[in-house]
Each structure stands twice: as C-alpha cells, then as structure tokens.
Image (tube, rainbow, N blue to C red; front, side, top):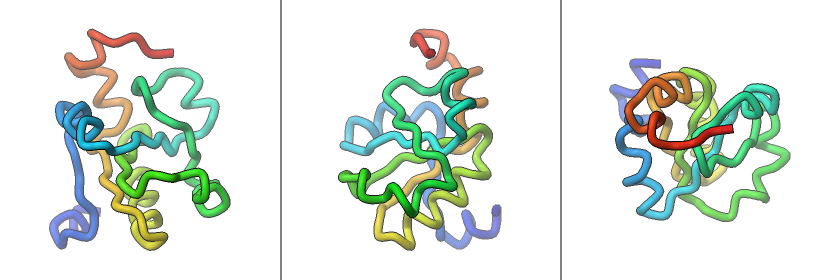
Length: 111
C-alpha cells in the first residue's frame, strides 16, 4: 500500500482535512459494512460497503469522493476501484478509527 501512495496511484487525506475536502464539494463515502457504519461514522458519510461499489456506482452522482473505512485498507482498495470506474477518489488515512480519536470527533455527534 505504501508503494501505491508513494507512486501517486492514490491521493490521501488526513482527518484534519475532511472539512476542507467537503468544502470543495467532495462526497464522503464510508466503505465499511452496514453493521460497522451503524456503530458510528463520520457525520455526513454515505454507507456504500466495498463489496457493493460496482453494483451501486450509479448512486454516486459526484465524481469527487473522499473515501473512509475503519483504518484505511478497505478505503485504499475502494479508492483504486473507484478510480478505475472514473471517479476522483481520495482515501482518508487512518479511516474512522483515527478520526474518532481526533479532536474533530470530540466536537461532533456520531451515531
């Protein structure tokens, strides 16, 4: 995964850049399972589990996507897939777990 990041295949973002990306019109996609999503997510995220992206891609009307998962691995895989499907996908480093322990999470209400 680090090699892909270094080679520039996948752009990444940090937890403190979420509002910046959303302000630029990116849509936040959470690729974890529905059960994981229901236990908590970043406010404003839309749940689209990794395994359902190909079937549900028509639901994505925004080409600019900020992708999150639990720790970043599924987000990385989803970002690669979304790029292949024609989207501009940026993976959130550390995913929900890192965000949920950040100062940003302390000021927001999650599920």
